[in-house]
Image 1 (cartoon, protein in one colour):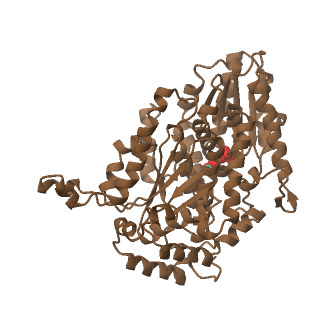
Image 2 (tube, rainbow, N blue to C red):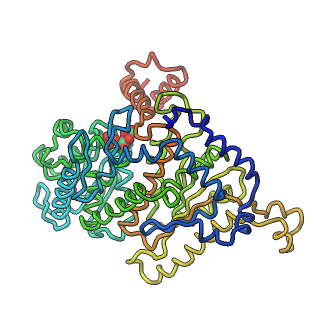
Image 3 (cartoon, helix red, strand yellow):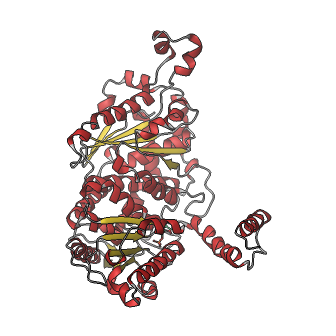
Length: 550
Ligand SMILES: O=P(O)(O)OC[C@H]1O[C@](O)(CO)[C@@H](O)[C@@H]1O
């Protein structure tokens, strides 16, 4: 609900943006830069260790002011403050949204239903640290007395993507003598490949599931238990030394056979896709150590505080959120590319896909009314420079408007051998070249001036005017990773607030789960299926026939 109870696209601020968009017409970034020599330095922000350049966006001072007016009219700041206060802003699930409490300092007070949750958060972090230290020191031994050397995280969605992404991102900080694997897919191949070369006696499974009912995770965890017990030739008593659980659901953890003494808890006010800085990060904490994990939490907290207190003109998540709204609503942009120029961020965009698309892939507003404005974009991308040799052609010369974030670092990771570290300038030269080419393109006149044959001029012309944000940091440290993730979390928040949707539920994933449960007995035993539509019934029959079951 907007502050005036008016639908988003009925607001005068929305109309003002529409009019402004018409006036902007085809104005080119070349013109905007020519008109303002300070633009390249003026349209920048510094947040913690992040340097943000938004000068290559199709905006003027007026655009930005109008977008901030829209944020005011839609009550973004009020909803933000309600979130930080622990109010139940996830209305369809009746829950508070308090991932920010996961990184609050020990002395902070954040109340849910009148209870300060910060002491509990730190109690769990301390328990995690104690456990991580024991594993890292070789003091946590398996059933046969051998120290644990292999850590396998079993989870899916937010219980996988966060720790898996952060493990990759911080690989240079990880214990290289321990093996870390992440299993998510219910395709048995995932678990098979993860454990086939491991010694069960040295393997710890971390079963990560907020609900502890997710069928993929419970199925994989059950198979992992079978693999372990068969490999050890042991009974159920071996489970306690080789399985720990990360969950909000102690009863289900116990049902599975994991001692709740080996459970690390979190709470229903932590959304799955906002959870890797909770107990869900245990595998990461074992990998990088508790101190580095805490540095990461401090990075998150730094951006939380920025989002909570920075004025609108200098508020980075607000700005990024509003830019996305601008392109979706007024340029018909359907997607948003996130292009990290770091090999270690290979899973960053996949992580953001859940964060953004599960949060803002909604088509009814908070009151259940259909929206008639664009909501969350398709988020996609892979690390540069690989994308340059694959799909950048379409970004440069295609017909779509694709706003893109370019993320890069001044320093290569510390433990890269000098010869390989020397490649970093080339990587970053590509990083800077791409946003330059996207913004300014190459005019037909410039192409002709190179002596290109006239019939090839249109093919070699780059229209430019493709909007990008550049995010530059000194190095990919635990703190910087936390800062980056919090930046995106709050950007997603801002967009959901303006679009007036509940960014914290995910009802859209439920139907498929229910149908899969109904279809499985048809596949395996030929039972039921009368209710299947003709297409699905035909496919199921073909599958059964191919498997020799009909
Ligand atoms: O941690 P859980 O409860 O196993 O859920 C895993 C994932 O499944 C979802 O609920 C979607 O199905 C995500 O939101 C969540 O991150």
